[in-house]
Image (cartoon, rainbow, N blue to C red; front, side, top):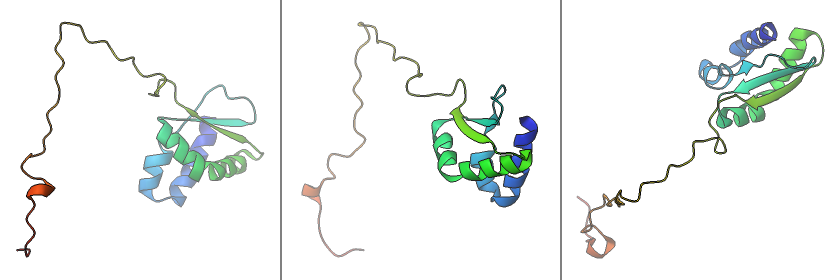
Length: 122
């Protein structure tokens, strides 16, 4: 599958602007052990996964079919170990002896609509 993905990468690199290619396509990696007739690509995070699915999946599927000489299915998955809300580390409880610190606002209290003076601009 790596050779097939490398062929797709070369074509996409020619077709896309360098910034788009490096941002969305280069981070994708082929998954080993894909069933016959499938190209499985893993994305580093959900944002890349969804954008590639929406904008580039059909083109990748066509390029893979051309390079392979037969129809292939494309499956986009989230990379193993990628941070997702369901897999994120649980919040640790604060010890009872630790005081709660409330963050103070960085706004200046004297600057409000009540004290706003309307005059000609400088």
